[in-house]
Length: 111
Length: 358
Image 1: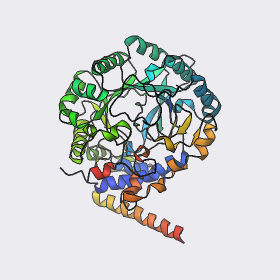
Image 2 (image 1 turned 60 degrees about the vertical axis):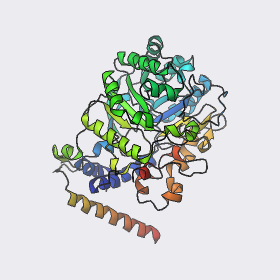
Image 3 (image 1 turned 30 degrees about the horizontal axis):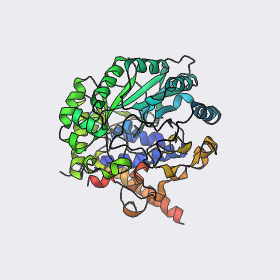
Image 4 (image 1 turned 180 degrees about the vertical axis):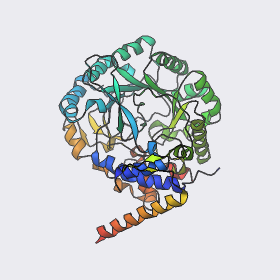
């Protein structure tokens, strides 16, 4: 399963923002004043123990329930289809498929 | 009170994220670079996470030494716009050349930020730092006056931190947050403290809890028991749902059923994966919070980029953490042995957040 599919399924679970995020990219400047920034999709920016927030000007916002977030609309899949929120049973099925895949890989490695 | 259990949806999410995280480890892109520019400090906090075995008479690293590494080793290998440089300490404001350091890194295309206790952050100093390119700042703010001053061991520290935050809020576009160390004393008044922060106009808040290292190891008044820790998780969860203030728990430890509910992202320890630090003595390591003996090289003897590329195996491959209580743990695949800063000199886990919630 490639990364795009994983993100798509995470989106259906309402968890895509926890796995990747839109960050800001600074533009190089000779001016010592604050640099301009532009949007960019990226790996998650983790708030480090002794770190500072990534400079993005983000403000407080309500955090919706994960289910509500997923139910808010369909999720575009990498192949252009639109999928809808995943049910508990479907989640269990996908989880089992992943576990089977992992077990197969482990068995192959053992050989 | 019982901890929140890990449901099937989240379990699946973690499984999928695990695969994505392997990609992050594989890419091993430098995204955050700490420069521990000084160990000097104007406070002597009870919970200080700095390695107490380090002699505080250790001289500050000359700016030229840091810039040499930046110019010869880092900049040729990264896109500076993607790397956030964090000046850390000690207390960074004791350095008189902080503005010069800021101007130099900004000139090279990096964004930079700093963590401060706010003791000497006057309006004038702040404006001068912003003019030198400061983009993000975190201020330690541990609770009401009695609580904060007890931890900081200084009768003026609360008021100074409060003023510092007020000055920061005046600067449009400057990203900031306040950091609270959750101790038993503030746990009893967390709701009240939240209302206070909101009334001060603070929009972003981070909470961490003490782990047994540095001075905090011996001070029982700072440690949360499992019940208090679960209460803290519930408080953060509830506050995030309210949406009145953007609150997160720090990057420490895997939190089981609370994953994604008390932080924006799934747990991962990025020390040495996307994060490096140059310590005051030149040591090259992951996060500054990781113990000194995990250094993988030193800028005065080794090439930084070579160390980053070839010697960070203990950070990138955490298989070695599968020992003791982690050996048979069913969530190891998601947690990978917890934060590197929670490992002692022998590699043993000092504190498990997941166990605290069980």
